Length: 138
Image (cartoon, rainbow, N blue to C red; front, side, top):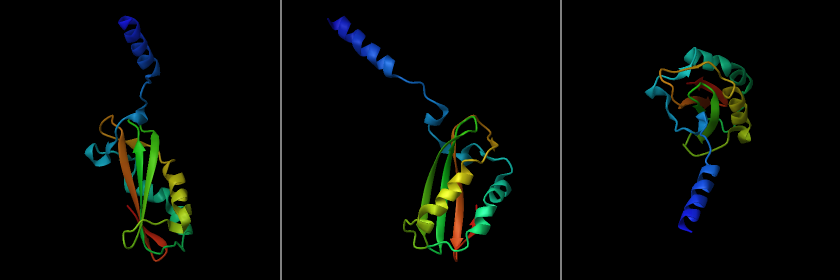
């Protein structure tokens, strides 16, 4: 009876086990292995230039948006996290969340990620909102 029970437990645990994908690994900071988009800041600023030019009446008028992109060890996109704060460092949504959605659409299409090691990373892209405009991308 004990052998049968042990067999059932082992069989069910192996049958529900799944292989982990590249995106299931733990992310490490981009700066720990020198991970960046090819062309670095220039390429990133160029990718977001249209949104920066088009969005001229952002509400609230001042604050920061941070995109945290999780990039697989093969350079593919895994997921994105967003953080939006106003000038008082309180959570907010710029343009009722529509601005961050536009930024996410551009961010997920960034390609040519380069790295020194074959590890999953997270990379940060920050936007400074000042006087209703995206003043700086870093």
